[in-house]
Length: 103
Image (cartoon, rainbow, N blue to C red; front, side, top):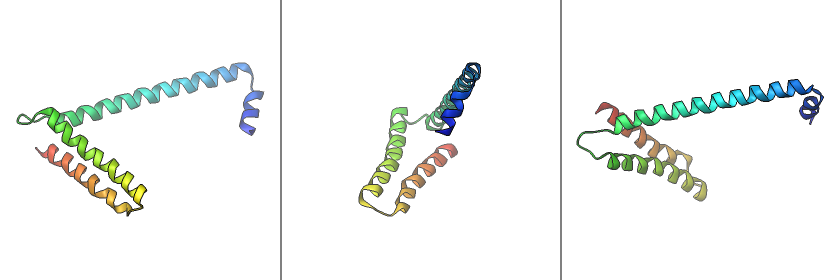
């Protein structure tokens, strides 16, 4: 509440400047996250592109591995299992990425 009262005491121009700077920073953060997401997607696409394998099959296998991570997280929370179980599918995904990078 103290912060809101301090903001209300500021002149109108200061509030407008704060809003402009906030929107500018938000736009920069969104653009950076889009750029990093695109670069990550393209690097994974280049890893999964093999001459002898169908890209849909490779993305499907990768999706199954990623889905297994979330499935184990749900199972750990729901059935109160050991949290160490999450590392097994995570290790499989990391091993899959390393193998694809080596190929």
